[in-house]
Image (cartoon, rainbow, N blue to C red; front, side):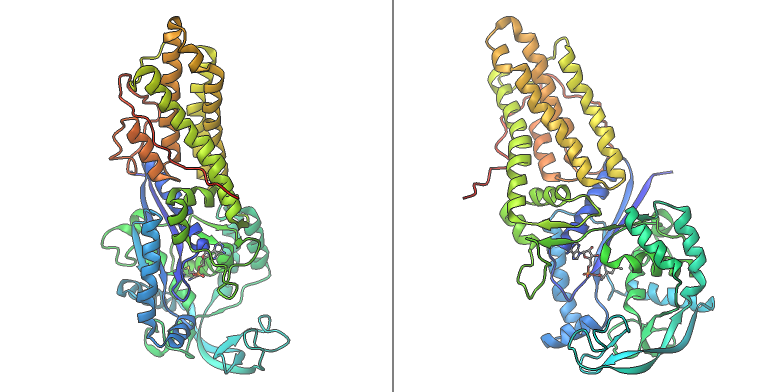
Length: 509
Ligand code: ME8
C-alpha cells in the first residue's frame, strides 16, 4: 500500500484580505506537504475559502455588492498570494461550490437520520442594530460588545446537534490519543473544556440567508461552522467518493491557529462521530502573530501584507523567516528588524557564504570540476557523518512539526561546513602541490555538503534548493515529487559554476 498524507489549512474568510497570519498557516502546511512528498508519500494538501455567513453577508452589503461578488473578488487575492508564495496545494475549495454544498447537505441529512439533529428554540441576547446574537459571556456589561447598545432576549427557531451525547466518547478519544490535539497545552485546554460538559449546539439560523439551506426546511441556513468544517471531506468527494479520494486520504492532519481550536477539536470530531466517520489524525494549533508588538488590525493600519514582503525580500526568505523565527505552537512577533537580522545572519552569512565560498574555491583550485576525493581523515569523517545525522534529526523534528528546530538542526550542518573551511584552510593546502589530494578531499566534501543542505531545505525554500542543485549539476525534475536517496553523493568530474549571490545583505542605517 502506498503511504498517504492529507494536510489541510483552515478555509479563510473572504471578508478579510490575506495577511502574514494566513500565510503562516498555509506555509507550515506547504512545508509538511513538500517534506512528505519528498519522503515518498502520496500527498493531498487542501486550502480554500469560507464564503458563507452573516459576516460575509454584512461585508458585501457595506460594499454594495452581492456576497458572491465579494467572494469572487477576494478569493483571487488568496489564490494570487498562494501562487506567489509557491505553495503546492493539490486542491482549493470554496464553500460556494456545488460539490461542497452537496456534501454539507448530505452530512446534515445523515446526522439527522440518526436522530442527532432536532428542531428546537435558540434563545440568546440580540442586538437589533447589529443584527447579531450574543451569549451572556460575550456581552460587555449586558450590552452589545460591538456597538455598546442594549440587547434584548430573543428566541429563534433552530436546529440543534446532540453534541452532549458525544461528550464521553470524545473525552475517551482525546485521553487515549495523546497526539490527537497538539501542542500539549492546547490538549489540556480542551480536556478541561470537555470535562466541564458539552451542551447541544445550535446548527441553523433563520436571521440571515447567505448560506446553505437546511434540507427540507429552506427557512433555515446551516450554521457556518457546520458548513465550513465539512470542507475537509467535501473536497475529497464524500460521500460518493467517485475518485476514491476519501478512501485514500481521510483522515487528515488539520493545521489551524489557536483561535479556532474548539471548533476543530470539539465540534468537528463530534459531527464526525455522529456521521460514523473516522476522526482526524491530528489537530495542530499554532500560535498568534503580532506585528511590532501589537495586534494586527485594519484600524491600526499595521496589517503586514505577505505579497509585498515577498516582493521586497524574496519568497524563500519569507518562507524561511516565518517558520524559523517562532517555535510552532507559540505566539510570535513580526518585526522588520528581526526579519532583516535573519536575512543577514542566517541566509547571507551562513548559507549564502557557504555556497559562494565553496563554489568560488572549486573554480579557483580545480577550474570548476569536482575532483575525486582522496583518503579521508578524522575531520572529514566527522563532517561527512553529520550529513546523515542531520537528515535523521531534521526528519524526526519535521514529523512533529517542530519547524524551527528542524531548521536549527540544518543550520548546524551549515555552520559545520563553514567551520570545516576554516579548519582545513583550503587556501593553505592550495599553495603546496603535495597537498593536492588533501585539497581534493576537502573540496569534494564541501561541495557535496551543499547537495545535502539543498535537499534538506527543499520543503522550506524550494527555489533556493533548486538553484543550488542546478549549480551542482543535479537533475531537479523530480525534486518535489519523489523520495530522495540522500546517500547518493556527487559524481567526481561534474562541472560546477561559481554561484551568484543568493541572499544579498540588507544594509540598515
Ligand atoms: O477562522 N497569527 O477563518 P479566518 C497567526 N473561516 N495566524 C493567524 C493570524 C495571526 N495573527 N490571523 C489569522 C476562520 N491567522 C474560519 C476557519 S476552518 C473550517 C474555518 C490564521 O480567515 C490562523 O490559521 O479568520 C487562523 O486559524 C486562521 O488564519 C483564521 O482565518
